[in-house]
Image (cartoon, rainbow over all chains, first blue to last red; front, side, top):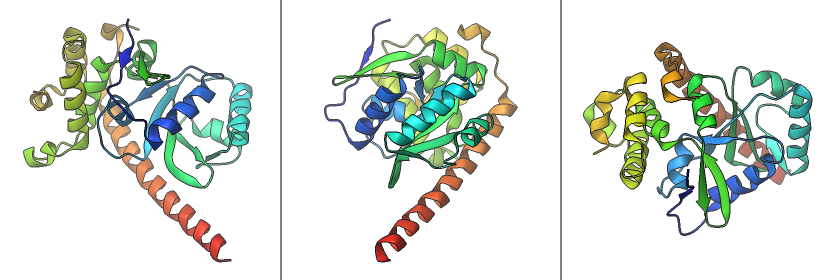
Amino acid sequence: MDPIKSIKEELDEFDIFTIKFTDFLIKYTPYVIVSGYVSILLGKKRLTEDIDLLVPKTSQKEFIILFNDLLKEGYECANTSIPTEAYKMMDENAIRFFKKGKPTPNIEFKLIKTDLDKYSFDNRRQVILKEATLFISPLEIQIPFKLLLASDGTEEELQSDKDIEDARFVYKLYKDKINKEEMFKFIDKLNVRKKTKWLE
Amino acid sequence: MKAEDVKVDLEELKEFKKRNAQERLWFIDFWVDYIKKQQNKEKA
């Protein structure tokens, strides 16, 4: 499948932070970026504090090497400075990495656990952002997942919901390239068909 | 993995949304504490 070319013209602080982190990470493990930052990476302008990233589970030994090398590279883990603790924590929660002295932006580092995670990872798409290459979840799952994350509030609340806006932006921008049959499979699996009216 | 093989547990996803919100709140507390500690260091 052809890589997606981001429409972004200028790299911002978040992009530079993410590119540096993922360029470092890829030497240790493959990854996939999911959730809010995907739409930002593709060109949507909005604020965020974190970049959600999924990685396959590695051995504790491999994780400790990565963790210690991240610290040496000037990153700090918000949850703990002890690698064995971080490794255990990841079975339950995400852990966050940021550049020492600057808690935002940060990487929310999560293990692949559910089938949705596995699908996102197995079918990750390459994105070209200027000179950099990053990997994001397929748009066919990204859009339904953002609809799921949107609140179950009133019409007015949904109209200004950031997750609805993200889903709509990605859908409208890549409408012709999205495999709609595949996307609707996820829309039904996630039970968000009612929210699809916000896409058009 | 293909789309048709993906199993989704909607209850588990509700829990995920709750946990995600809690983690965000935890991070905001961490962030504020971190900034305050830095400010105190600078003052000292």
